[in-house]
Image (cartoon, rainbow, N blue to C red; front, side, top):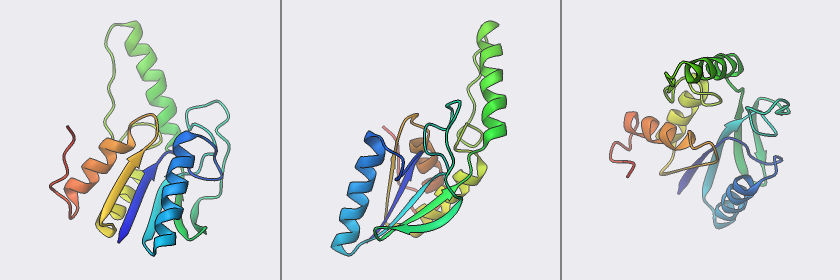
Length: 149
């Protein structure tokens, strides 16, 4: 079986969601499944003042295929400023999944490719943007039956 995980951070980043995804992914590899993780190049939260950087590209960690993509930093900074200004004027700005923070267009495209490759897609992390990104990508791919309650 092919399983794709979409998450904001992955090992060596440390945190609850990161550890959960790592353990499940490595367990699936141990069973003989193929596992791909699509994540960002940040070590910490992408929106933090110092998110840390990991090398962009593909690597294998404990049998798990990890694809690290750069965060849409300019888009994220611009939208963060726009949300603050909008909030001050009582007009909240709700960006789309395609433009929001770390899940910019590059990561969304990688999510779509992962859904085309995988039999199962798992999205996790906070903020919850990987979940709608996975659903939107899946609807455009070979899993049009995926819905969000």
